[in-house]
Length: 69
Image 1: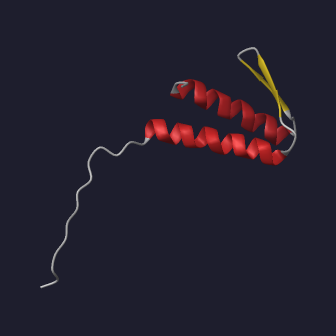
Image 2: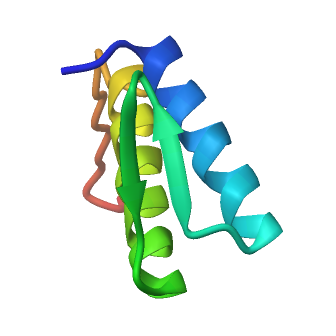
Image 3: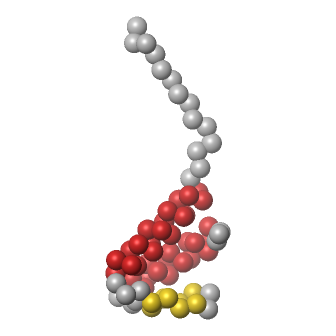
């Protein structure tokens, strides 16, 4: 699994290419060509989920309840 900095870099490169209408992205010596904008959107969604998963971790959950009396 990639670290947060690498995931963020990949996301930024992919977003820049998508907004420019470019379907081929190069990073770390690899080239990926997306056939449709939907594929790029799915890749961006996956990167965002991975970034969120590495940064947002719930450590403590507190539950409070009452009987309504």
